[in-house]
Image 1 (cartoon, rainbow, N blue to C red):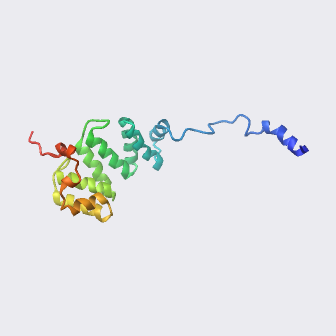
Image 2: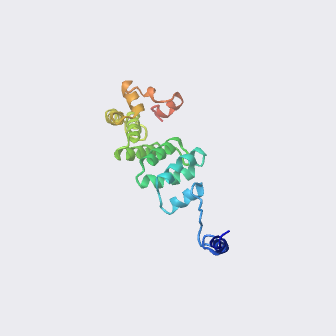
Image 3: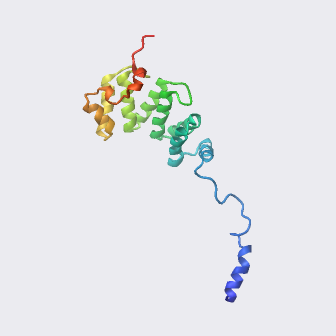
Length: 178
């Protein structure tokens, strides 16, 4: 071994890379705790906001609502769509069709095709908002023109809502007289 190699080997243990360093060199980045820490500090980014999907699929709807609401307030339209889904189905809070429709409206007004489609459906059904079939169809058309397949399918069916509504959800859209 050369004198230079011996010297390097002797000095390596005293190098800052091998000694004690302040801070966390490898902080957890992909954990729910880290996502919630970011959200509670008001830090949103694409990965943090997308993590809400995995959190809600895990069944932690209250946590997912915290993530999605913060991200939606920061302008992430996908988070608005998820807030709509959570409110429409009573996940993590009581079912609230008006709140669900408002989240879809916000996404639609931001130009999001999924928001346009969902808000259009709400208007056509009168769920969470006064029924306005013409305005609803216009929004579905905007989403279809933007390339959203399900909107194209609905338009192609002559706006037959059964084309895009699972039978299991029909009870939600019945006109109730009570």
